[in-house]
Length: 374
Image (cartoon, rainbow, N blue to C red):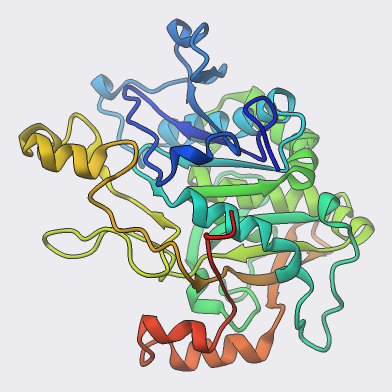
């Protein structure tokens, strides 16, 4: 399935001034996953743990906040360049992913879910949704916790508008309401985890519109957040080119809130029964009050590379929910993406029961997978 030279999944962590440990469950799986820090700093160029990309890096000394356009543009640039570089650095990787410094991932769970992707793509589709025609190696797969946004097609002068999380539209459609003229509506993977099949990463890396935006280096034109712009260009590149029509289906593998969530409670808890990713968890950043004042044992247990204080579930957990993403090229030149669950009756049942069914009972009702087969 993979080797140190030819991993199955290449994962890049975007960093700024700090490089916290890759918080994952199983270093024994590092022959299947290549981990890299994505940096802009020249001193990292010779360190094999890093990939250095040519992007601006806003200085926190200048008061740049995470919501500032310059920060968002830098994040977009690093994400875009990482996926393009990863295609060359890891020519046999089946999947390429991006995470952030405040993410902790259950790596064995993530691998198991990616291995299940072809089955999710073809099993029990809704009657009006034909199964994806591509072989698994050519499939356009996108895994993450999806949210939705509407962007002005020109990325200026209006700002983007956030439309809501994917958990609010599990029955399908697009949750943005009526689109304004020239508005691009699309889902995007929340920045804590964004994993793409090789075929999808290749399509987006070959899109001129993406690189034109990077080369302009005009943060004021960002008109949206780093993550939302990934969805904007997915719509612009895949729909406008007719790629979805020629090559078939873009499949979104959605991690619901039971699988992608922040640590909960005043004394934050770690993973739950179905967790794939914890995000955001900023306490392990060295400039945070908790990190500076925590007892060494607590800090090592929560922030160490294997997160020994966490109790990750290695048994059964619900699999990501598969959605078929369709594209519409409108007469004004803008694009609209919509999604439909591959199994509409299952999503209807989940929406109706999620608030009342205990987490331990979900695998009696919905498709589940285990990490133990890895």
